[in-house]
Length: 187
Image (cartoon, rainbow, N blue to C red; front, side, top):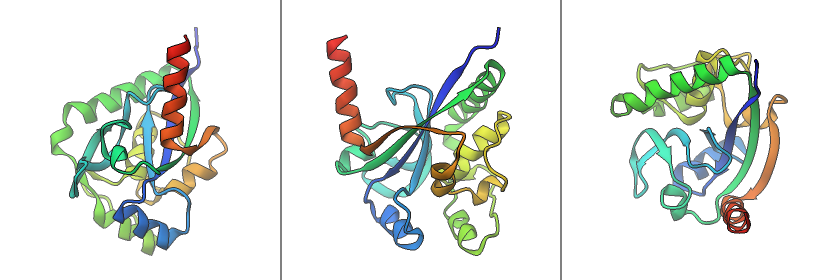
């Protein structure tokens, strides 16, 4: 039996120094991409700050919208999308994600890759990713191809424009979280 499984793509703009720099260059509303296995964003992954208070060191992170980096930026704007997968794609994606989780310490942030986007040349570095490159790579390695370009050239704009993604919510991230809290208090 082929079930429909869902993963979620979260686009954000926090207002951090790096996100402001990216926003000034791209003029895009969102500057960061994460992937979630649940609508509640408890299983939310990306490449970004390892420590919410230290923007210098980045790598593979399990993001926390309550106590992590987002707690430092309460005005974070977001767009939240769903992507339906079949059983095989979903199992592959979980397996690929498990590889990142098992080896999280060996990964770093591909800051150089951001400059590759500017000059339209993919800059890939072993064990190093930037956020949208990570999500695109994870999807590609799972047999899910959303873009006709190398993952090292994929940007948050590509996710925002992707017709295979279904927009579920757009607004402040904190407001989305507050809606979840109310929902769980009622049910």
